[in-house]
Length: 253
Image 1 (cartoon, rainbow, N blue to C red):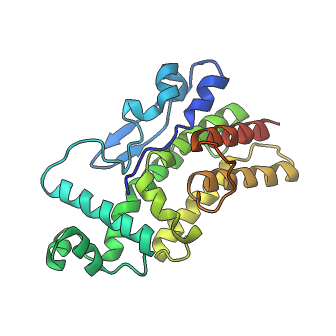
Image 2 (image 1 turned 90 degrees about the vertical axis):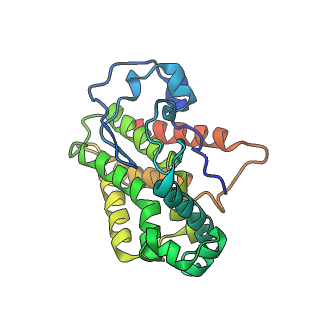
């Protein structure tokens, strides 16, 4: 399986709204994995936004776009192969021996890079989960208006879309009940916080429920692609454009 960056969420922004200044800046730290802080979608040239923010090297996450050598290259190869096998067979049904066999490694060689299967899973998911942690640490308790909330939705979406390897593993089985408890707690924390950020001060109960449903729709659109309804002949990019348009209109109504 090849891990593509996916279609850009920012295409909808580019075709539907003019460029404007942004109050926040983007912090990008690269230590073998991408950790994104605050963002500045509107400060990017519109053409770059239309072709995807990854053109600027933001949100590469698990997508390996640079040639690597030595231990780092081997580690990435292990993570790619393991992710393929987890998606194909399920995490519980993929023993280390199968991963080693697929790589033509001995188990001892595999243990040199990872101490166990859970360590491999952590290596796949941590770049995405760490990046989400970083973005959420920079957010206010609540956004002051719908505009800032929408910018967050786009930034969060780009983060998910640019971490295709991790997202493919998150989607295994259509749920995450099989995951180790520590990872599940992190994911649940992210879900709770992103739902809180969808709420604006003074929202009615009805609008809060709608916001919760829209956040769930966003997660399912990006993460849980299998089994969802499709329109014959429609590309994934066109579907995502429609979904993002619907989410934005609903959030602003």
